[in-house]
Amino acid sequence: MTAIAFDHTATGYRIAHARNLAYAAKLAYGEPGQVEETAREWGFDRVRSFEVPFTQPFPLEDTQAYTMASDSMVVTSFRGTETKEIRDFLSDTNAALVPNPGATGRVHWGFSAALDAVYPDILAAVQEFRTNGQSLWFTGHSLGGALAMLAAARSHFCDGMLADGVYTFGQPRTCDTALASAYDDAFTGRTYRFVNNSDVVAQVPPEPLYRHVAEMKYFDADGRLRDKPPSLLGGFTDQVKGHTADMFAPGADGIRDHLMDAYLARLDAAAG
Image 1 (cartoon, rainbow, N blue to C red):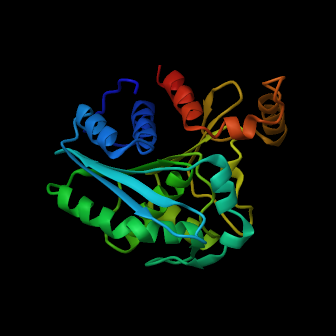
Image 2: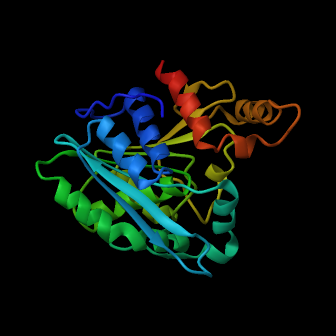
């Protein structure tokens, strides 16, 4: 894995910190031994991995995550999933909205169930590791981004812990307008949702039933990082440019842009 240096005293938004948390999201795809070894290289001396398997007909194999801690920072990262698997997971048969535990609004049933399986263990680890008021961060890619956002919401609304930052990459929509509004009020200046150009997963489930939370950080077709997508006409032009970037696979941009490695390449360039 690319060498990175965590600033354990980081606060607020910085692109270098976003890049580090993206690599933490990537690490969630690794085996527990790799997770522990890399986390310790990053300066985190306490590491705990979580894996809860599911049985059919639930459409996911498991929920995987890890929590790493130092004397200054605690980070929880959730594993994502393959593009096809998450698109199946977001199908109509799994997309019912259910009440969100401890807060106003409603949330995607599948995301809520996937988080339910692992959240008590994550909460216990965070409370055990966070002994001197360390900063608290959540991150994840794809499905992992949805779970990171919902875990942050649950830890605040149910357990009184307001995360210092939530950084997600290729996150699908997770909830209704009521929960998105309550979340945005609580997490203003703390949540950053990165979207890479035509990423198809960031466009589902459909509006208006589902809503994204703020605040978006958008990579355009040229890899420039913007605070929001271009205007309607400019956005259409940017999308077309992305979709036609590969003359041998036109239209494949939506899947290619969703890959974790695509986000890392964009963030590597942006961080200089």
